[in-house]
Image (tube, rainbow, N blue to C red; front, side):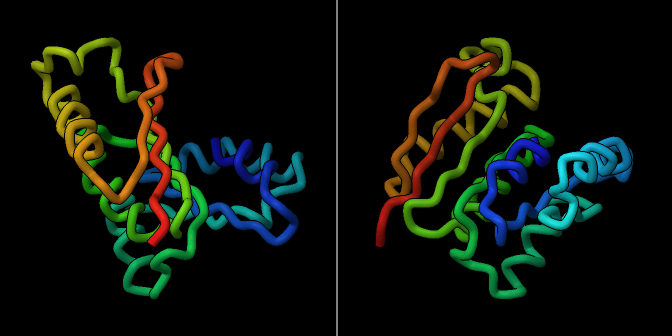
Length: 147
């Protein structure tokens, strides 16, 4: 996903990518370089919540156009809440895996329960327009309302 987003950015655009492990970055870096977008990627190793908190403490509120959430499901709601602060008015947040193989209908495991809780929260959140797209395992598209 980082490569695709970086390739779609304008010349001066930047992707801030988070991962808990260097493993995926090691794989991705050769492709980022081959595509000529390695300079557009700010890759941060560590827990994503800590990275998002750092961005917020660095004054990055409302400075992002887009956020894509595809990480540990139990923290989805916390990722969403932080990304909503980081994304500017009319910015987009996309959450992947929101149908979770249909398990969110009658959630029994912790991941399914967390995804359902996130979905319910977003459905009631008046700060965004949202739609759940039944593409693959479900994409929730949220557009932050204008102030």
